[in-house]
Image (cartoon, rainbow, N blue to C red; front, side):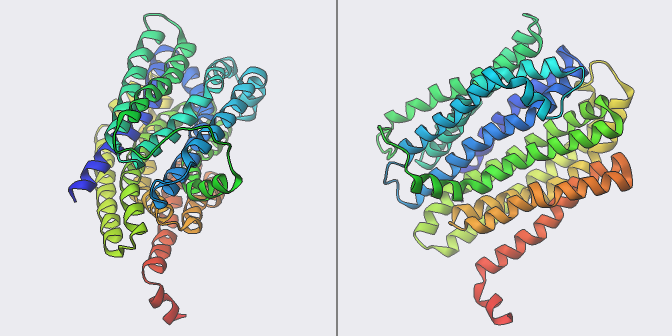
Length: 430
């Protein structure tokens, strides 16, 4: 399983790099702007998830199609054109509708000007976020996970360094954090362009009009990745509204700490899944079921070990971790975050499997099963559970709603896996 370790390690580092610059934004905004800045950042995050999710939708779906077809066809060129057009829609929104969008996300308080300032930067340069996620997936599937890793690590490091420079020495506040974030995918794309020098590459960029059949199939195969990414945004949106009603801005700021830390964990699990995806798609195309199941078992073990490690670190260091994000030393924020960490992050033990199984089903062309998992954990279960739990148990119910959602989803996910791997057993029982 040397190949698994190579692909997974590079993919995890790449996806962690993506989450690292969101975390860097949170850390520097919390300490450079204060609690209102942290609230604004958390309110803006669902739209950021949507933009990244669209890149994953086209990227993971198109790259899976590219692998299943043996690298033949103009899928890459068609989807690059599609991504650019989608991105331009967000650019127009950044020019004309940024304030209504901020209000639509739930911000009507003192943090509104900061939210608008941050969103404007993200929306104007949205095409680069979408294209970056798309190109990363294709380069990884074209046998170059190392370049994908270098691109993501470099862009993340750039963001972290310039986040600090723009927010503190240059005193640019929220605009500085946004500027560092939006330049990062441009740097990543420049690095990824070196893939054209790889002699064995099958990937080519040519002038090609998007075809409905290509987009439709890519969307089907990438839908689980999109819904997985968007599930975080939808959760944040719902959590923000519930917490604003329960405790106001300080509760949203406390949740901002937890939500941004959870992104790191989810990025690691997504990295494991994206790392084994090319291997699974390749062996599935050869109809080597033993190898497919071997890669899956290996991925599930790695994801669970990461979940155990992350939960242990968060449990032991929850007090200092919270302190990093609490410039104003607000005791209410500290109390809410410190008590929430042990309960909220129990979700890691189930989400590690759910994310991996969702992408696994996409990798073998089972879009319906992948869609079911992503839909359950991101939408059908989390929304009613958080609304009910918050009514019954207040803030404790809010923190416990995510673990409950992930655990219920995991039961369904493993049931779908059993039906897929042992269809004869299922038919004989029925």
